[in-house]
Image 1 (spheres, helix red, strand yellow):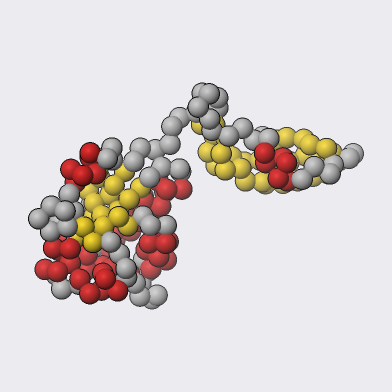
Image 2 (image 1 turned 90 degrees about the vertical axis):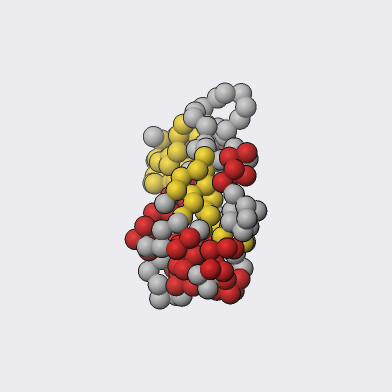
Length: 173
């Protein structure tokens, strides 16, 4: 896909011409990535790759409840939450059960999940860590050291019903 604009036009002015999502039902074009700019006879030819070009609504609100304590399982929780966020949706993570043991491990720079964990944490995608499970598995202090929110609204555990009431779909791992 290409677009031509006159010499002297700023990149900002060009980006402002990209239609944005609106309530009018018009086609949504978001997140342009410039591949190549060529100057020919006083004009610039810009080839654009859109990472998302759709009239569909963003992905639904999704909360990923992670119970399994396997890093090879938890990587999929992190990847999917980040993917949902990157596509304009809302992907939250609730860490339950054996998965609470991974927090201290992932906090270490040397852990293979550290970068994904740090990114999800930095984007506030981790909605809650189960207080009851973290306490029972003796990792509550590690969770607190990471400044992660504790969920305990259902007899010490995070409530799935609360997320359903807020319009989230739930996926368990």
